[in-house]
Length: 281
Image 1 (cartoon, one colour):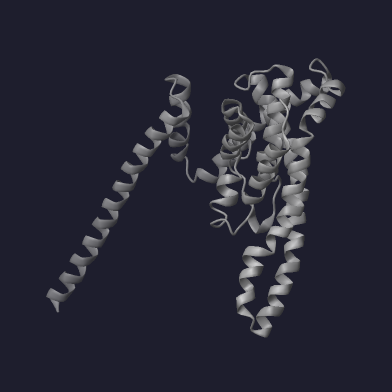
Image 2 (cartoon, helix red, strand yellow):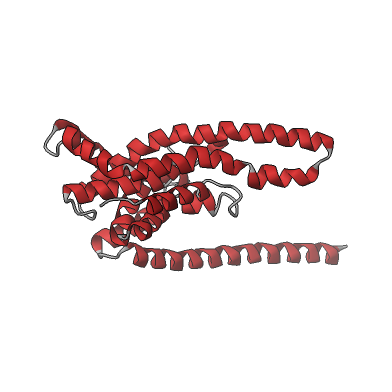
């Protein structure tokens, strides 16, 4: 698989969009387009192999499923993972002849995501540092009362930061993906210690992502049952992710209605209490 310039440009463009707050806020940008699961679909469409893109993106998403950026602090940049790591992993899988759905494919995908995510952290902080320049300019315009120029600070000037730290690196790394993967194949053969180590570590990384998610979701011991219910459906009944999501949505609606009933009951009790007080008076 060889990535053309047009495909590399599209990957760089989506890398910019996935980190632009102006694109409908971070909910649409960073927390949707930037996630490996969505990035895998986008990369699959751009590179003409949707199946491999989704499978690689799914494997990487499990590792970073609970990744957040508290106070702008990141341990890995999902923007780089999605639009640099996924294309490189797709090229590597095709080069080695590994099925993306296999355990070896998942291990290689997560290993590539980890390597690129660490590099992407540098790009993330580079973007944040350049944005400080535009913020400084915005404060000066605010002091002068030039409020109309604040739209430029919010929607226009940050594109310079993202083009420098997102578009250009993604463009060249994606375009040079095939030679880079070939170099990896030469210096890191499949039967070598380095590749065996990458596969082993890559296979363990999803457990880290699940553990982080478990730590955030589970508030008391009873929550563990609902957390593992989806895994039980997949392991014991063979239900896929879509089926598990539908079942989970069904139970979410039931839980919501039960909570609303309890809320209405408390409101009714409060109204009756007020009415009884008025009767006594």
